Image (cartoon, rainbow, N blue to C red):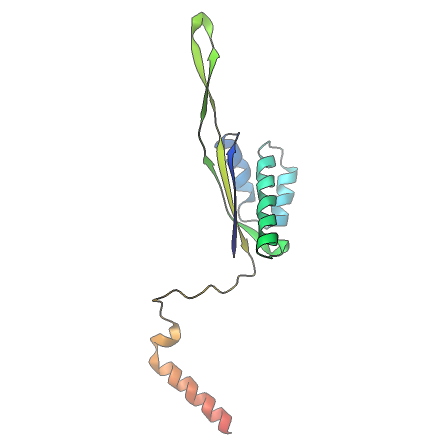
Length: 145
């Protein structure tokens, strides 16, 4: 089962957050938390907060255990940029761009539950029509003995 969480409009550039996000991707939740606690980057704070939020969603809403969760996907996409102006010499102005980021995370349960079958898919058993008959005959012969 997949559990999703998003943090939008984080006031930090996506480039800085991606450095932290790349460390966490593919790790278990416990290992990811440990990495984030000891990494000396300011971007660890919003990423750790989002990870904790996703874990809380998984345990409260879906009844999953924290130890079975793995970070399947985590992305840091650019949000809107705030434009500000800084005064420069001779009455000029220079732009200041304050970047924002949308961070999204997808946690997955290690102990995967079997997914429901899609319509139109053919099972392996259905592809070979003789296989079912042989299996049925073998079960009948073992029952009579």
